[in-house]
Amino acid sequence: MLSKREVFDGVPEEYLSHKERYENAIRNSVVAFSLVRKMQEEGKTSINNYRDVVGGLLGSSVLRDGSPLGLHYIMFMPAILNQANEEQQEKWLPRAWNCSIIGSYAQTELGHGTFIRGLETTATYDAATKQFVLHSPTLTAYKWWPGGLGQTANYCIVVAQLYTKGQCHGIHSFIIQVRDEETHMPLPGIKIGEIGAKLGLNAVNNGFLGFDNYRIPRTNMLMKHAQVLEDGTYVKSRHSKLNYGAMVFVRVVIVFDMVNYLSKAVTIATRFSAVRRQCQLKAGETECQILDYVTQQHKLFVSIAAAHAFRITANKLWLTFNEVNEQLVEGNLQRLPELHALACCLKAVTTADTAACVERCRLACGGHGYMMSSSLPLTYGLVTAACTYEGENTVLLLQTARFLVKTYQQLDSKALTPTVAYLKTAAAERFCVGWSNTTEGIIRGFQVVAMRVIIMSTFNEEVQEMSRTVSPQLKEVLHQLVDLYCTYWALEKLSDLLLYTPISQKEVESLRLRYEETLTNLRPNAVGLVDAFDLRDEMLQSTLGSYDGRVYERLMEEAMKSPLNAEPMLQSTLGSYDGRVYERLMEEAMKSPLNAEPVNYTFHKYLKPFMQGKL
Ligand SMILES: CCCCC/C=C\C/C=C\C/C=C\CCCCC(=O)SCCNC(=O)CCNC(=O)[C@H](O)C(C)(C)COP(=O)(O)OP(=O)(O)OC[C@H]1O[C@@H](n2cnc3c(N)ncnc32)[C@H](O)[C@@H]1OP(=O)(O)O
Ligand SMILES: Cc1cc2nc3c(=O)[nH]c(=O)nc-3n(C[C@H](O)[C@H](O)[C@H](O)COP(=O)(O)OP(=O)(O)OC[C@H]3O[C@@H](n4cnc5c(N)ncnc54)[C@H](O)[C@@H]3O)c2cc1C
Image 1: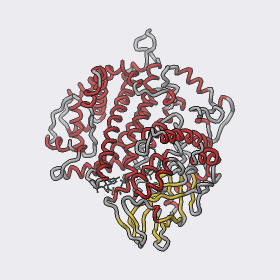
Image 2: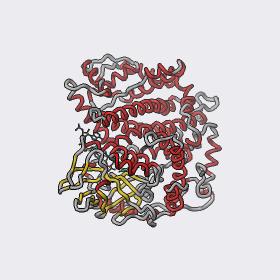
Image 3: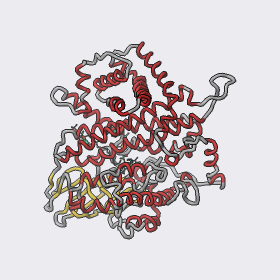
Image 4: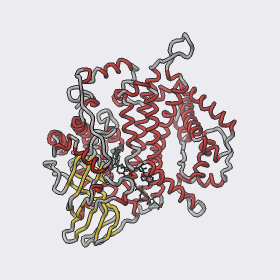
């Protein structure tokens, strides 16, 4: 098994070229996902519960900047489970599950990502041959972004506008082979490659895909929800948005992902803050730990509380997701809009907050936080991408707003679904809720704010759940975290509270004092709280956050690994753009060294043996 950082004669991956990063990612991924296959064979993971296993691997040090095989598990397989009929699942799932085919998910195009009803790729049914003809009518119709598609996947789910009998029926999903299974060469009518270097996730091998009147069998349209019969008759789905199911699933999974990244970043920053001594609280004294500064506590402690809040929320969202999907199977679509709104809101809020908190953790570590070896810049690159993919955050919050406004408009005529029932209470109190500086008082205040602006999501604290299952000592600390999280956001959103609740100036002042008291109360447990995330050094991969606190020795050891300390010069930088966006993006993509060859050597050396179960 490859050791976690030994690649290319011991050169850490930060110093690899773009092409070497990809080749290294393939080597690491086939080894890592062979473990998943071994667990499958031993019955330790199944097609319905591999999320934790794959999620753990994708967040691990072995695949620290993503994996070309990630989308296979994250979207290709869930899309088959969610949108293929039984016959199609029998045909495709076993091959996907044992990785004898590697898939991706191709929805976004050069010209469209958010407005998916505007996608340009067409799938036109030819009844004479019982085939669909896939075509990219323009450059902007090229699929752009699908993970793993550049040089790795040989199949993918393609989302295209379905035409039959001269009529367009909107976007539908198709499973399409894009490369030869033996040679890995792109099939005739397929134009494919990778899109080039990105801010982060440079091991994911995001690709582009164009079709030139490419034919597939009718039965390659995923037909669980809608169908096209042999004569071209279109049978529509019970609900037009059931085809969006794969996106809802990934939005739910992303919330769990944010818990992992936020826990990692705040562990690194808190431990470093306990080791780092800088300046004196009183002249003549020894320099104090920077963790003793209230300003440092203000930067970090709310991230500890947020990691717990997000974990509780993610678990609750996962329960809701499974409940609603069980109801969908029984034909009950009643809670689908609520699930969509929840998944949109929580994906947007947790990714935006995590990106902000990870950046704050980096800033809290001074210059050492800016080092790649701290792992904080890499973590930021990973989480900030999540604000964009799987639905850009602004757009997803608008979806939630749309649902809340609609719910409010039906407040008196329709039973409310569980997660918006608070709107009834807030409405009943006619916004004149009395203010109290308690956790419950703050939550109620936000419910009133939400009621008024109908775009704030409310924060469901699971305090009762904690009091049943934890010791008095732990309960006290967890309550401190709850208090911290609520008072932090009450102070952050003070303008709303002042506008819409009767909070008084005196109460704001005591809220501020209470906030600082809570920081002080949490200080003695801060390192213990991040130790409780139980993240091994191998996971953190950080010179600043290692458990033993040997920060400076590690910084120097890592610095000495730079080839710059052994050689005079390294690569140059790339050219800039002239404003012709799509053509320039494609021209830049074609500069990638990966696109210079039809098939990278790692296919024959690693990927093919892995897919044939010979590794
Ligand atoms: C399993 C292993 C896990 C491992 C975990 C490890 C790692 C972490 C995980 C993930 C990270 C890694 C990789 C990420 C890969 C990312 C891949 C992608 O990015 S795939 C592409 C994603 N693209 C999008 O998300 C596109 C965003 N746009 C949309 O979703 C839609 O365009 C829209 C914004 C929702 C608008 O759709 P539309 O225009 O059709 O609808 P509207 O007219 O706005 O609304 C009409 C109506 O429909 C309702 N609705 C909309 N969507 C849904 C839905 N999904 N479900 C249910 N209902 C929906 C909407 O509410 C309206 O209802 P009403 O008001 O009643 O009319
Ligand atoms: C790392 C990464 C991996 C990805 N992986 C995949 C993948 O595997 N498969 C795949 O299909 N896609 C993938 N994507 C693409 C991703 O889903 C899209 O980037 C995303 O949906 C946003 O679409 P866009 O990039 O076209 O931006 P746009 O939709 O053009 O948005 C650009 C800006 O316009 C704003 N905007 C757009 N519409 C509205 C509106 N109605 N109201 C207000 N503001 C609006 C947005 O808020 C945003 O700020 C990936 C993207 C990234 C960054």
